[in-house]
Length: 275
Image 1 (tube, rainbow, N blue to C red):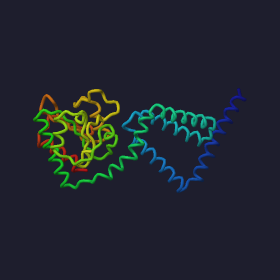
Image 2 (cartoon, rainbow, N blue to C red):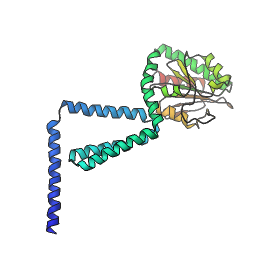
Image 3 (cartoon, rainbow, N blue to C red):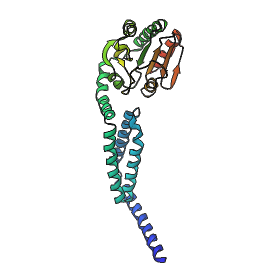
Image 4 (tube, rainbow, N blue to C red):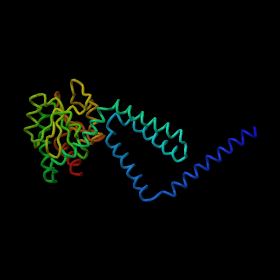
């Protein structure tokens, strides 16, 4: 018994010595370069989280972060066998993520490289132009509602909408009441999805907002794609209906229904002119 006790006691002391040695090495080598390295790592992780938080990949991130933390701890403590096993596990997880979520990863890469280009092509509106744009949108939506024409308008606020554009027919034309009425009243293929609007420009029509769109994309608050777009991309989603003259609006986790002309204009000004 004493031999076993001494064995575990010496092992425990050796383990503590290894920890102290590892920590002293960290303290001795910590400098500006290491601090910048850590900041760059956190910046990369934040960018990754920002890109995937609206996708299915968000389920994998906690596992990957957990494995990375365990790898760091095992490296500090000198647990080499555990460290290499975790590195092997991380490689397996990364390969599996690519195989399972390959299409979504491709979309993320394409969005990161193309959304900035699209943003450069669209001139930002000043406050006077935003005010005129709000009036044009309000008048168009009111006319659609009174005529009981179902329509779906998605207005960009802050986050890129490249993925929404890719799910529709890309355009680049100034927003106008006549264009909106023409597209949605004729019930063409372009009216089967959302009209995407960015800084007063119609950048896409017929967008189904999601890659897994059903055959009949419904213009209704019960459509989960509408709520996801309003929440994750922080867009303004405006809906008019076929059987009534109601107007609904979504933005982030806020929902408005049965809006009048004045209330619709007030909500749009509160969102768009406070950016």
